[in-house]
Amino acid sequence: MRPSRSLNLIGFPRESCPAERRTLLTPTTARALTAAGMTPIAEQGIGAGIGCRDADLAAAGVRFAPAGDVWSARLLLRYKSPDPGDVRRLVPGQAIAALFHAEGDPALLAALTCAKVTAYSFEFLAEHGRFPLATAGGVIAGIQAVHAGVSALQHPAGRGVLLGGVPGAERAHVVVIGSGNVGMAAARTAAALEARVTVLAHIPASAAAYRARAPHGVDVMVNPPSALAQLLPTADLVIGAILVSTYDTPPMITEAEVARMRPGAVIVDATCGYGPGYLPTAGPAQQPGDPPRIVGGVLHVKLDALPALVPVTAAHAYTTAAAPYLVRIARHALHRRPDPAAESAVIVRDGALVHPVCRQHAGFYRMEVPA
Image 1 (cartoon, helix red, strand yellow):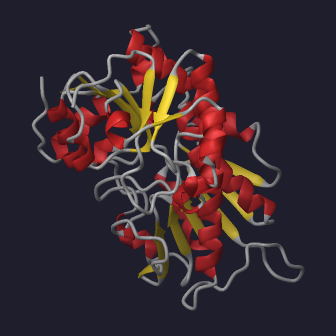
Image 2 (cartoon, rainbow, N blue to C red):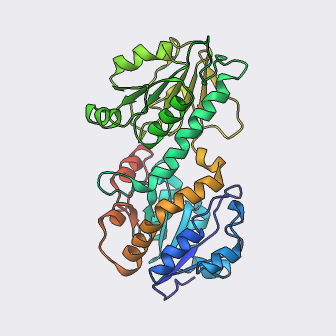
Image 3 (cartoon, rainbow, N blue to C red):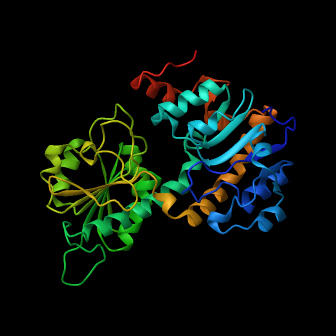
């Protein structure tokens, strides 16, 4: 397959996972790209999973075509990363952008480098010290983490505590580890349910910044080991929401600390990093619908794709925030327009693994990193 010669054609292939209903192509995305002089091309039915009709997309400027024509575009935009089999459809010189999270997927990184393409990973795109393409998904995951905790607390082996405030009953205590998008949304949701909430921030500057806008009744502390050790024995629900959990992240809650928690307390890992660190007692990621994993009498919920459970909300919230950045990525990839934010998202360039986080992770699974 040869890439299309058009420098303004952008392909939106179908998502690889049959159960994935989200899509990056909504009327919002299409209008932003067409206003910038670009033509989105996609297969029919790409928006069916979120109730988005082909007619709505066509009215926003989308052109429909067979899969082969879509995959031949010089730039491909997806919500989630393709599987390694789909990557083999790419040819040198193409560019592809998605939520790759490839630092934890050696097979995907190897496929991208072997394909000799340029890959942009949305979660790494940084501007003004923030990660704007991680905001919507983080907020959704934080809200859902509280919902998952509410359900687990009502499990037969759970604490039997209701997060909502009820006269005559002690308020539930929720501890949130992290003050980023996920942590702030989780704290806001738990506080709205009238729980007693403590947020642990990474450094004093983060604690001070969040304390100034924290909801009423939310306590904010810096997170040295002594603070977490003090809070765990009184916590009904602990939500893990740190920004990045890598292979070398030290354990946040050890087995000995779990043993000091209340029987039936719940830990929800909402960010699900890689390797044995951070929350080692939680084990591997679970699938939606799996029962909580019970370790030391504490219920563990570890779901790494919470926003996928609400595809309509996730797709529209994400594309509303992402649309202007997708235009900038397209100009950077297709027209070589300088853009530090778009450049920050590049993980592979012409087959070379370039992003420092991906290169760091490659060492943990001994992947051969191209020069």
